[in-house]
Amino acid sequence: MERPIFQPVGTPAEELDTPALMVDLGVMEQNIAILHGAVSGSDGGSATGQVRVRSHVSCHGCPEIARLQLAAGNSSGGVAVTSLAEAEAFAGGEDDSPAIEHILIAGRVITSAKIRRLVALAGRITLSVAVDGSRNVEDLAEAAQAAGVSLGVLVDIDAGYGFGGVAPGRDAVDLARKVAEAACLSFEGIMAYEGPLTMTDRDKLAAETRGRLQPVLDTRGDLEQAGIEVATVSVGSTYSYDVVSQMSGVTEVQAGVYALMDVETLLIRPEFQPAAKILATVISHPIARRAVVDSGHKTTGPDFGVPVLEGFPGAVARRFSAEHGILDLEGPATEQLMPNDKVNLVPYNLALCVNQYDYIRAVRDGKLVGYWRVAGRGQLG
Image 1 (cartoon, rainbow, N blue to C red):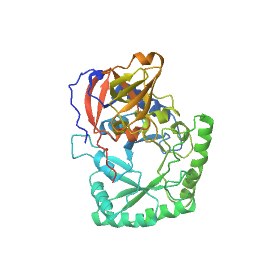
Image 2 (image 1 turned 120 degrees about the horizontal axis):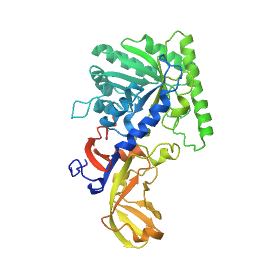
Image 3 (image 1 turned 60 degrees about the horizontal axis):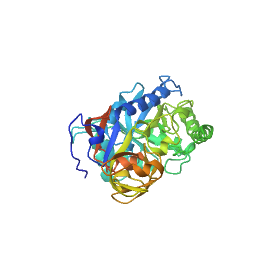
Image 4 (image 1 turned 90 degrees about the horizontal axis):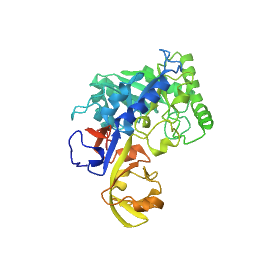
């Protein structure tokens, strides 16, 4: 567990104890406005004539940030998470974090122990869950009926990512019919994730997104022809938000990283800015071409890629041990970055980085405004 030194509100950001995960609220609010504003003018065929945003909050794990996303103009009214444990954390009750009352669990809830927890949670909040198998539908219906609760259900359809999801077309229709006929389950619609499409060419990304999702949207038509109402078609991501929100039949975009951003996504979506950064302190400059900071694997989560150092031309974050980061220095940087200097590192992958922390240091105009709990940290089950 992280044990930060809690410093007073108003502390200048550069005086915070390190390593620290900081979020610039002004940048975050701008990012939220960009995505929600772009999607709000879209009409993918929803009942209201407008596509909504369902923020996928697993990437930041913070209820305070989720509340700000929900308050944006065209939110779906709920959020998405990956695990049951995350849903429990966002539903509140164990600390002072604000409760979220409408949650979609986009991952599978399979085991009997988890299903018992699921129906217990459904007695407290409005809860939906994604499915891609008949046995799971049967188990959910039996547990919901025994507990006297109702569960919303979305059928997860494989959109080519190869991770999970039933095949589009007949298999999806058969599973949706099973849900619609089950006791205490309410078929709400379909969802899909086309995968992390890391194409910097916008035209190619748009074509790939449309190609992967069109069978999902065709399945909506199959369902409606079979007499099964489809209220929700939840697809997309930060990578593809502008593309999917223009596709006929889409009702909501599941986007997550957009609020805080990371290097991985900024390469694809440069219209956003990094709001989340790791504040670190230079602890050594033993030779001209090398400096060491107090932030390593345990605080940056660099499994998919190393974080990017900001603001020092000629300085590159190159290698990380468990506790430390090694900066390679050239040119003017060889005479900078001395012990006690502070630096900012932009995480390469947001979810892996945030999961290292219990608290986000919320900063506005360069000053601390509060410590926000990462309630979703480690909530994997």
